[in-house]
Image (tube, rainbow, N blue to C red; front, side, top):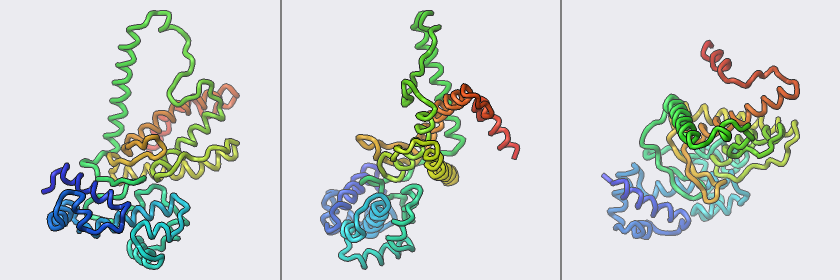
Length: 308
């Protein structure tokens, strides 16, 4: 059986070879400091795929990702994937995905995970240029909910401990909004834009894309942006919960340098910071005389959902 370190070394050599599709099997094995015979045997044992098939699949997954996130021509992407012609690439892509490359480009998926091809190992292309291993355990929605509660209780404990180092003047001083990622002087428009951009940002990060275009901050523009991003974000969370992949990871390419997050951590992040912004936005509406949203408490919504 291949050790985790051994598997990592093998996958590292395959990952490097993705940028050199002309490298022969012997050269890829040499990069892992193994003979061709031992390399082939270890890859097949660890992943359930011969190294050639594993590499071709990863190159096709990378090609599918580039079709949806770049303006490269199909021929350029085909060459990057090791194919000598547009026609050869299209045939291989259609066999793997059931559709032509142009069809994937026309209708990009919600997340790059939808571009993953079925395989026994769970090893897939990870944008922008890495490989992803499946999580060693399944994280359930109940686990994440418990983790969020634990985070709240532990953070409140830490807040109280640190408050004990302050004098009464500081403890009783009126608070000025000072929350990470919240503007010093937020407006209702900026809060709404921040919540919509948060949906767009994390969807883009999950797809391996760039920071979203938030230039249209008119109410009509915000509504249109949220209609698309809210729909896709809701679908992503529902699918992640259904598949039990909350512990899986992805690389956020919108960060510098790119940062790895879990899906569950990302969902928890959005819930937490959106709640802060949402509470402020509901309060701003109340100050403007619009009070039908109440305090924005999710309890009545959750009670009604539980009641069916």
